[in-house]
Length: 131
Image (cartoon, rainbow, N blue to C red):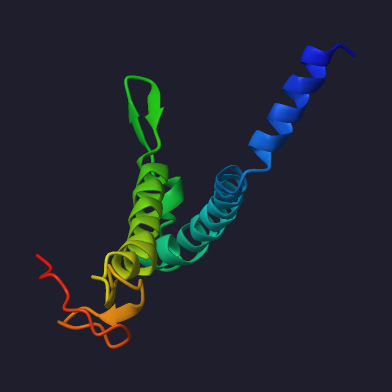
């Protein structure tokens, strides 16, 4: 192999083994698995409850228009799927990550301090006011 090909292979290996690439790949795999669970939940539990039990299967709801079949039941399943996934992401990811910070760093000794602190408990420096 030529040196440039070996160098390119090493650069690619370094790129792939970076934390953010591995984290993104892991997140995609978990997302696909989570989507499968939610889709099954909506299709097998929620939509049968929405249809009159034993009488209507929401997933099979169709409309024939000019010889074309419109599967609006599948669309209802997809919308419910989206709503459940969006709600889970909002309440389990977005909300917890958007909480305001509880601590700040002292700009002089870099110790962790409560947000309301006006003096550092470690180096006793007077802290600048935070906006």
